[in-house]
Length: 288
Image 1: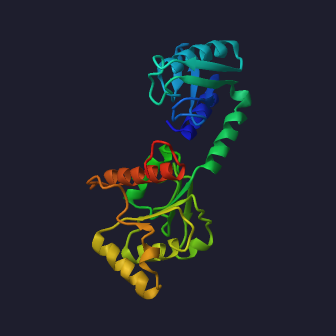
Image 2: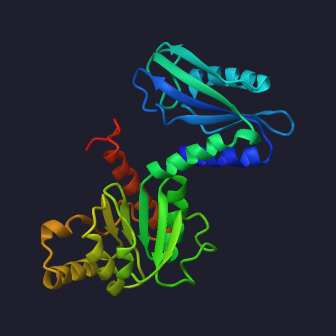
Image 3: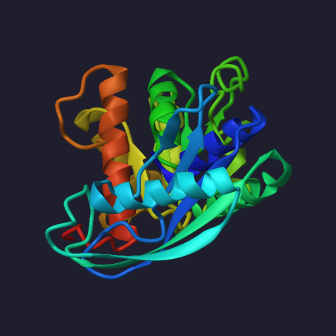
């Protein structure tokens, strides 16, 4: 579960009048890839059973942390604690090979849920925007996946019957506008992504032409090799774009996993965005 989704689940619990302990890694030493982005929640259900959401990596560390978390929950208290692990004690998913971890425990109830709301607001600002041009079936499946991965999905289409909150209930934003004019109304930054999955070649051309004028970190377009070649030749002839400029577009979009259904295509696109984001964030596990 991503940090943003963990925080959203925390809000739901607070609205149900549950009390929670928010558990966050403040600092760690060792070789753990999970640092300050690792957060989880401890709470009691209606039968007073111990429950958790998300993980800080599992293993002995999480076991020790949760014991302390539920004690603090009963006391309605905050705390900060340091934990030291030997190599033999590590063992969890993403755990460090020995070292120290500092954990923050924060008691929260419905009267101070603004703490969580503020964290969600900060997460939304931090997360990359994915501008999805086209509101068809692939987009529906893609938004569902990317939302769980903490990408802010902005769906753009010129048809309100397709681009609406009823269909894309988990989209960050929906824009109904002409594909040409909409670029004057959005601010695509160097950490944002553009996905081109419109309903036809002519619309793909309009979006790709304008997308290449932005500072987008990533541009991807769906389509066959023949269609892509046709559009790129047109860009060179009509817009005087060079091969160097056009190669910024990842086409056909997605990881090559033999995807056929819209669900599989959405998975392949999401996988490529995960990889590109990991490179952008300079994660230690990625070999460029």
